[in-house]
Image (cartoon, rainbow, N blue to C red; front, side, top):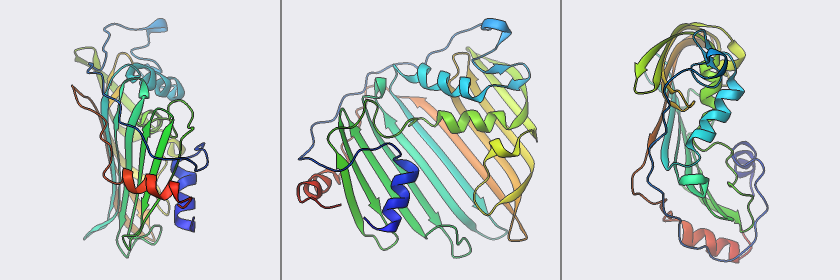
Length: 276
C-alpha cells in the first residue's frame, strides 16, 4: 500500500481490519422509514439532546442522539466543504453516504479536489467504502486515475465508519457558535448564529486560521437529528482572505437499496489475488 492509501486508511478507516477473503454477497435492502420527530422539551428543559435555548451545550450528547435517532431509518447523507479565494475554488471536499436501517449496509464516498494554489492536498483523491454485513470493500483513486482496492470479510458490526451520517462533525460545528434557537414547527428547531464561541470546535481546515464573520443556519429535530446546516466564514490563508463554506444534509430514503458499486468485482478480484 503506498503512502496516499495509508494516509486515507488512517483518516477514514480507523479500526478497519486487515485484508483477506473471496468475493462479496448481494447488498442489503433499505427499510423505508421517516426520520423520527418528537414534540416538546426533554428532561431539564432541553429542546433536544444537548441543545437548550442557549444553543448546543453538549456536542457529545447531540452526536450520540443523532446516531441513535437515525439507527432504525434508511437515509442519505451529504456534506460539502469548499475553500474559495478571490478568483477560484482552492479546495473542495464532499462526503456522501447511502445508509440502510440499523447501519446494516452503506456506501460511503469522500472526494477531494484541489487547485495548484492549495498545496495541502493532491489535485484529486477519492475513497469509496462499501459495507454489507461483515464485508468491507474499499477503493482509492488518485490524481492519475490509478485505483487500488482492499477490504475484509470480518468487519465489526456497523463497519469501519463510526458515523456515516456525519453526526460527530455536525454536533461540534453547532457547538462552536452562539446560536439563537427558534421553533420551526413539525418537531424541529431552527438555529441561527453569527458569533463564534469556540475556535477549536469549529475545526478549520489545515493552513487556514483566524476564522471570522461566521454565519450558520441549522435545523435540528427534537430527537437530535441534525437534518441540515449551512456554515460560512472568512479566514486567512497564506496572508490572503478566503471563504470557507460547509453544507450538511440528512434526508430519509423510501424504498431504495444500498447500491453495489460498479468497482465491487474488481475489489473482490484484487483480494483473491492477495493484492491491494
